[in-house]
Image (cartoon, rainbow, N blue to C red):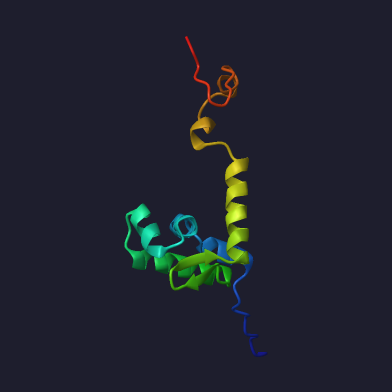
Amino acid sequence: MPPRKLIDNQPTVDAAAARINLRHLQAFAAVAAHGSVTRAAESLFRVASAITRAVAELEESLGTPLFERKARGMLLNAFGEAVQARRSASRMNSPPPALNSLPRSLCHAVPMRRGSMPGP
């Protein structure tokens, strides 16, 4: 019997994406918005160590750091900005979940302008 080949254990993009969950993305977004793990933790009502762990797990899954660590906080690096841009683009292309449950005809029944309220 021929010897078995060792399988390359490098994660694929699909395997890395499967390990990313909502907790990772929420922590990433909060740190990016607040520039600090402490302020991000306060905004999410979590402890700072949980936020740090979630960001570290996300960075490990993606295989690259997303932030520059500074003495006074964290700044997005080029990879972090790309992830944030991707996240923003995907949010813009999908309708809010509440609209998915409404009939299509109802969504266009009342014309709305930005800053206006439907009247009687």
